[in-house]
Length: 112
Length: 113
Image (cartoon, rainbow over all chains, first blue to last red; front, top):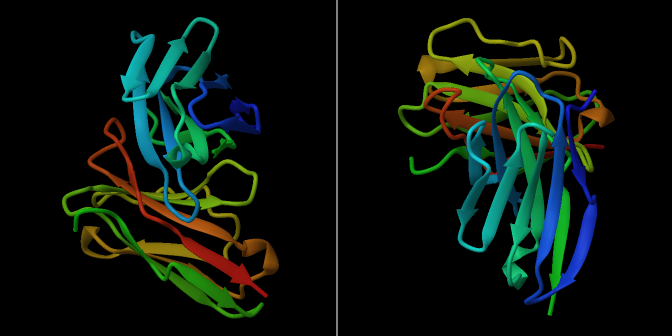
């Protein structure tokens, strides 16, 4: 059973607009949550990592939030650019465990 | 090297043939992972190497899959008697340890025809 659920599965936005991606998880005990960006034909690249005590983390136009009580995270993309077109993957780590739980990803398409 | 290198980037093979996929991790990274990514699915854990410890092979889907890591560096994932359901992107990642960031390679896209 997948312990990390992402929504929406895909979305299309116009260049310059904002969007928010959601991630819900059941992994416990929780260690950290990471958001990755995966361009087509490439491996995932880390955007943010948050531990239990952090509720927001920014990386340029990307802002991730974490609510460890409700086990929810979001990734907000501000002023989207064509280069933001990619799959965004939420990854959750269990405490003292090297295995990662991956969401299926949200495919974002930015159109001019 | 500067990043995790995987080869080949694409592999098309006939059903029943054996294939070898290679991963060259970042120098000094003691942890190495193999994952499988199928269309529309999250990454599936296959195997984990940490230093000289015995690898965690619990994610390997069948005994047709095996992996080794020589000298604590380069790793090879071998799939014997390939089946069409083996078609996927195989990703390798390395890290200084599981509490550190992971760097992924670009993957090998395997197509079994």
